[in-house]
Image 1 (cartoon, rainbow, N blue to C red):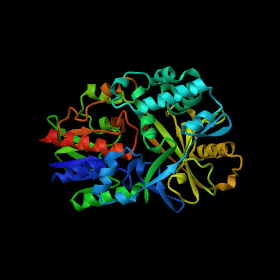
Image 2 (image 1 turned 60 degrees about the horizontal axis):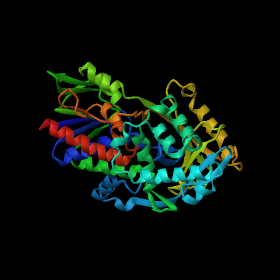
Image 3 (image 1 turned 180 degrees about the vertical axis):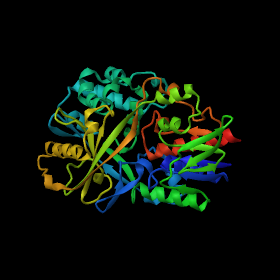
Image 4 (image 1 turned 30 degrees about the vertical axis):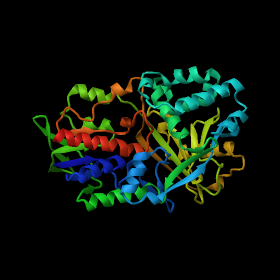
Length: 429
């Protein structure tokens, strides 16, 4: 069969691998000038680094399997990382029982409830029963109103805004579990990264695809999927018609109705019901690290970001590299601000987090934006997700929404891509 894949991110590349291994013909079409999607690297003032931060957890088994298959398992490195919590002007250690006990923002009962909830979430095996439970109510019941306001409320408000109370407990619970299980002891968190960044994996995937006869077309997004009698017949790319048996879309599903106008209205309604929050991610190269932490959550009235990620405290490098994401609806006034204005805002926060910070620490600065960064997953989201197999015969689709309830990661891209490729092959047999 001849397959056309839309998108050359990890999911599109992995779907191509699976199809090629079964002897199918595959062409990948990517609108960007490079492969990788959100995991693609860019030249950051002489440093090749990803547009958006990525890390590996100890439970990322589909990723481990792929690294072994491609012969690059040795590039996976592990670092004992630290976590911080900046609360009302003070930076606290976080992520261990001792750090929780030393935190001055909560009483002992709240701390016990918080710790018990984390242990409970870590051991949940099936998250489907939590799909219909509201996350904020679930957290409040477990940790109490005081602990919720101190530890969780600002994270929800600054990442989800008006959607804060529309999130399922399964969505937040799996995030707690994934990080909680990435430890080598109760007192030590351990995170992983690939030597050379995600490009190490992407380059190997590209090589595999090309060696198997697959083709990757850059600066060549699919403009139209053409159908005959309800079945895919061809695609239109850069003014040319290309025959194919099936199309597998790994782009944000919101794009699908634009390129497949023959989809039934009720299916388009299902797609349009899936909401997303964009992100503007500030990246700074600094002479000195802001802290010792890889991840720092923030709850401070003077700081309007949910946290900062010091990637160089995971993948050791000099100068220091810091990511600061602004999640916000496109209707938020800040979305209309320039990249420089958002960067200046983050730089202004750093002296509050670390009083030793000076503006001349900033060696380089950048900001990337992505419209479909975080899917809004309300209670009942399992039932909301449209089928990967669309009503148009030969058209299949998935995006990061299909990771649900798991977090966005390259690991989940690989996991979902295998499902998508299998769906595409079984649907064409």
